Length: 212
Length: 212
DNA sequence: CCTACCGATCGGTAGG
DNA sequence: CCTACCGATCGGTAGG
Image (cartoon, rainbow over all chains, first blue to last red; front, side, top):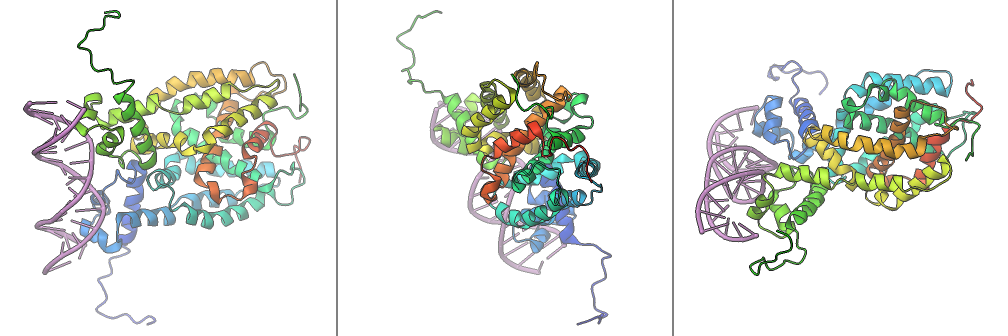
């Protein structure tokens, strides 16, 4: 049961992991063509196995999607990049987080968002509730770093503040994905840092609360 | 050629418009199940005609999607609601716009976003460029109302300012759609008005540019 | 893990 | 505008 290695062990396929190959192929194909636009035959082909072999690892196509959605969702990378931000004050912290995000996810906004929209449109969000319950506590913890014990904040409700922050990044990915190269350069350069700036200070002058 | 009505004219189907019926059925089905998840037979059935009849109005399924995407996209309603906002200063204007949006689109965020994501995922954005060129000038004009001749703005680059505004609404729809009822009430009540407030003033106290 | 097959359904068309 | 059909492909399974 411990480290007893029988001589009849399989011929050691040298890190070949079929299950993972299936999931990787599926993630790429789902992201490119949607769920109904991807066939089991394509998934098997891209994973380098036969159709029947795929059904030896997963009971159905939907099970493959579910595994991809839960295990391969890029939100982990997103949170890791935000949490790893460095800086003494909230301003430096948030701009460093933006910088981290710009390196990775901005290059491929579709990968970050496509799985979510397939889930919402093609599955009507039936797997969302469980996903939310897994991700929500992690988001709360991650946000502590930005908002806890800060005296220079206006004191907006914490969850509203957090929702605004998520919306900030969400919206940047969306507009980048939807309009991307159609946007004029002056709407894109340093875009995420400007969004952070708006989030922190707003678009109005600080001393003008009212004006005609 | 003018108002000459022959006695052999069709029996006046009383405002029956098959083409429109097809588009309405298709919009609903695409929004619910995606493009590849919707069959021509379902569209024809929901429109109350036979499969062959549908192909008398559209050459292909993709042509139907294209017509839905261009003619029935809810962005027109979105822009109309934003443009119709009333208020003396930018603060009142934006909160009124938020109020208008809350009435209509917030109730059905999926309808607003699903067509866009089907286009992005299942069609890889091949129709986006034309859409962008139609919508962009209208967005620019609509935004004049908010940003032109205002002396109490910080003077951020206009397109950045606009992108932040679109992102604000976008992100609100997204988080409402994705997480909706999973969110605690304090993250939802007056949510859009809080987002407007963050957009205008930021989350930080106005006098604290730096702090340890 | 593969080959060969199942019934069902797909987008689209012929012919009237 | 309908019925009846086309070849292709779908998700999934049997049997080995």
